[in-house]
Amino acid sequence: MFKETVPKQETKNSSVEVRELAPEKFWSGSVDISKIDQKDFEEKIKAAAAELGFTYSGYLTGSGDEKKYTFSRYPRRAFGPVDDVSVYENALAKLSESLGANSSVEDLKESEEFRVLLGLEEGYDEYKKKGILENVTDTNRAKEIVKSTLGDLSGFGINIDELNSVEEIKAILEKTYLGKKHTQEEVSSILGNDFKLKNADIYSVGSWGAYTEPALVIEGNKANLEDVYKIAEKFKQARIAVEDLQKGKSYMVETKYCGDPDKE
Image 1: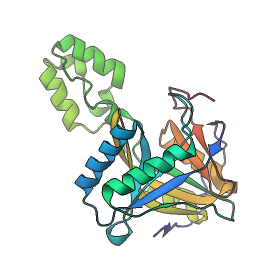
Image 2 (image 1 turned 60 degrees about the horizontal axis):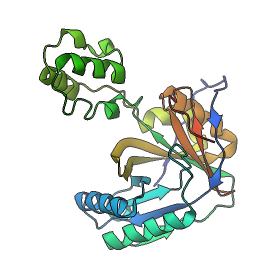
Image 3 (image 1 turned 90 degrees about the horizontal axis):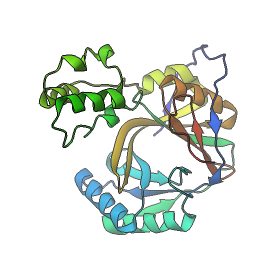
């Protein structure tokens, strides 16, 4: 169930600069995974992605009998044109068949509603650090990679130049959390009662691997969408996907933290 928010803080008077990209036709499908073991789900969706050459960009919500996996037609164009709706329908059918679970496609709404999936980890260094020193044996080379990929880590109490081996660098990166975690309560206190919030876990998988992150599903009236843009910027998110649940379109929105702008 969506959780009602608390009274809104009056802290958001300034506008935020974002880049809204061209929209695509909306599509979103879900699979009931209430009876599916998490490990089995992960294995089956990875196999389906590999077989189809498809990227499942979605998230997990709910628990028990209400647990489901939802993925949408997010219009990222960095690697080429957005796949046709039929490709998503085929991917949904394949995942449903592999899991032996029921699936459904979302209908549009009559009211002026939007939906945004907001990641709750500030920045992306936790994801970037995974495997960056794989097959690296030279200490100086390891230091160069860390500096170019993760930047200055002194704010986390790490001085890369003082470390003496690749193993030591790997160990300190492994034990140090390089992000900042936000919460539903924090978002709720900022946005107020004009929105519906629901806890989620991003789970996207493709030929490149898998990406996970705690997140919130935010729904509300389109008139209040800029408030969500401000939250995305505050949390240093590079981009978010906006789904217009009334007009049936989806589009990407890039913040000032986006270092790899998408194609129109």
